[in-house]
Amino acid sequence: MPDRTTRSQGGIPDGLLVGLLAFLLGLAVLIWTATGLSALFTKGDWPATVTFTRTPTAVRSLIAQPHNLAAAWPDTPAQSLSGWGLFWGLFISQLLILLVLTIFTLGLITRTRARRKGGANSAPTGHHPASAGANSAPPAFEARGSGGWPPATAPHTPTVPAPHPSGPAAPVPTPAPPAFEARGPGGSAPGNGAAPTDEAYRYGFGYAPTKAPALPTPQRGLAYGPPSERHTAATEAIAAATGPVFVITSSPALWAETKDARAKLGPVLLYDPSHLCDTPARLHWNPATDCADRATAAARAIALLAPVRPQARMDAAVAETAETLLRSWLLAAALDDRPFKQLQRWAQGTNAQEPVRILRTHPQAATAAPGAAGELESALTAHPERRELAQHLTARALTALSSIHIRESCTPNRTDSLALASFVSEGGTLYVVGESLEDPRTHPGAMPLLTALASSVVEHGRRMAARSSHGRLDPPLALVFDDVAAVAPVPELPQLLEDRTLPLLALCRSREQARSRWPEADLPVTAH
Image (cartoon, rainbow, N blue to C red; front, side):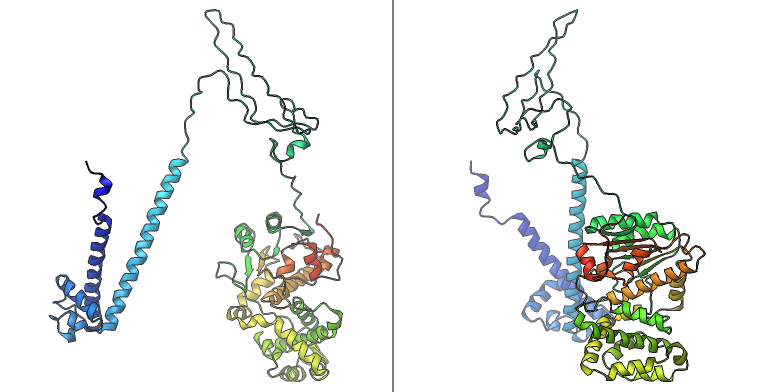
């Protein structure tokens, strides 16, 4: 009898033959429908002579002459057909649609089968009956003691017959000895139920090392840890807050996990200029808001320059000049009601004398900022090299305004301004979400804008606390700053840690990271 394998070697596999026939049939259908649809779209009618039975001849003709559609359908008038471009476009479009549907169907079938298989594998199994035999299996291995020698094999406990009044005793199975046995420092195994010794935690001994006891979650102060621990601490601090909360984080997951619970207590605002969170409801804020006041403009300029400010003492004069320029530009923009993007043009040298003119001629400039025009003009004319470096520094702080969505986030409407001003009194929550940047001095991104808003909110909360009868808000504004050094290095952080006017939980990756952002502050090691 010939072997079945030998007989099947010379034939064509059935699957290949069926697949080839399906391919030819599908090709004919696509050619037919593409011809009819292209004529329908261009001429308004499907030609009566374009039928499926004439498709094989059309396919052969199109293979030889792809651009001659009239030759493929000789029985159809040429004026009833469309051009070859639309025909091939419809053909390729139908082919792509079929390909996408095929891939989707195969994926759906695969997921369904995998789900059914997983459900079958996770079904509980019945208990297997015990195998015949008085004693269980011998120990698989036994750990060595501190002396390094394996102990002698323990003899099996003999089967003890139980007395029975009516017949012979049935053997009582002896419990199996342990698969392995941990030894103490002296080489002896611990007794039954004894706790494992320190020696048992070495590799090869039978006790798995236990986790170190978890430290209590810090509630206030400055703490350091990996992202997972920081996320847990921030989540618990937000959940424990009974009043308004101001959150800084680089994790959109923290916003997603806590926003629903906070929405039950008050309004929830999100400032996310980089669009890291999946929501269209984002807060818009103009960093020049309230900068018609000279002190506010000075604090805002310090916050905007904080991420890019050089730390070397030799660059202190350049940093002070940049601070003067930015403070004066904020004053001019606020007094003349200019959009914040105008500051980027001034920083790039466009119309450099325009803010001087505004500060000199505006009616409110004499009372709001006396002498600001002369201060700005002096910074622009004296020390050309220092002025150029200072302009580069301010331009770097405002480089994020080149992005359309960040520029749009600096154009608030009336609703945004009212919501930001009232979220503290309404017990709401403000989330500031940004990218985690370890070296913002070269590529700051949106960090200057985040820092400026954070500094503004902190100062607003401190002023509200100072105006209250006890010098504190009741309930207080809770500050939860997760990854604050890499998202928004608020200049007021060391002072917040000292005076404790507002309950603050600041979380950083390490103490070195915190020192690099606040080098002159004596920051504590851990929170409490």
